[in-house]
Image 1 (cartoon, rainbow, N blue to C red):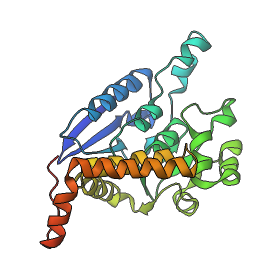
Image 2 (tube, rainbow, N blue to C red; image 1 turned 90 degrees about the vertical axis):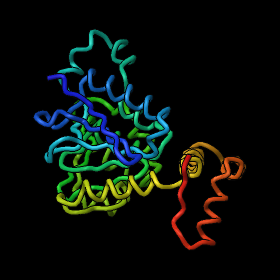
Image 3 (cartoon, rainbow, N blue to C red; image 1 turned 180 degrees about the horizontal axis):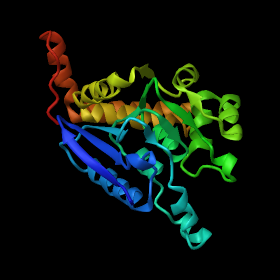
Length: 255
C-alpha cells in the first residue's frame, strides 16, 4: 500500500515512475523518500543525461500526497520536516521532462511544475485543490505558477482549486504540448532522448541560467548567463559542435 518509485535507465534517459496506480499514484512518505534518493543519485550518474517523470497506468500522473498519510503526521513539526517530493524533482540539475495524463493534482501538479518541459495527454485534468481542503500547497505552486502564467491566472487556479483540462493548460502555458494519450510516452521519451543527445554542460547551463532568471535582476542575470557561456567553452564541447556543423553531421557529445 505504500507504493514505489521505480527507476528505469536506457539510452541516457532515466525514467522516474510513480508506481501506485490503484491510488492514482498518490505519494506516500515511503514514495517521497524513494523519489528523493533516486533524484540525488541521478545527478551523480554520468550515464544519465536527461530525466523523464511519469505515472504508472493511464488514469493519473499523480493525484498529490496521500491524504491518509497527511493525517497521520504526529505533529505540525513532523509535517514541516517531511520530504517534499516536488522539491526533490525541482532540485535535479539535469533536464527533466514530465509526461502528464489523467489526474494531475496538488503535489502531482507541483511536481509537474518542477520539471523543465511538460507534455500532457488529452486525458489530463490538472488542478490545485488544496484550498478546498483547508490548506495551501507546500511544493511550490504559489511561487512557480504566477511566474509561469501570471498572477491573475494563477490566482484563479490556486484560490478556487478547480481543475482544468489539457486544452486549457496548453492555452495558459502550463504544458508545452498536448498529444493523444496513446502518443504521450513516445513523445515525452522523444524529447528526453533529444535532450540526452545534447552537450550535458550546455543543457545544464541553460537550465541554471533560466532558473537564475526567476531569482535575479536582469543585470545580474545577464552576467550569470555570460559566465555559463564561458563555462561551456571551457568544457570544450563547442569544438565538437563546430566540427559537426562544418562536416554537416549531427554532433556527438561524449561527456
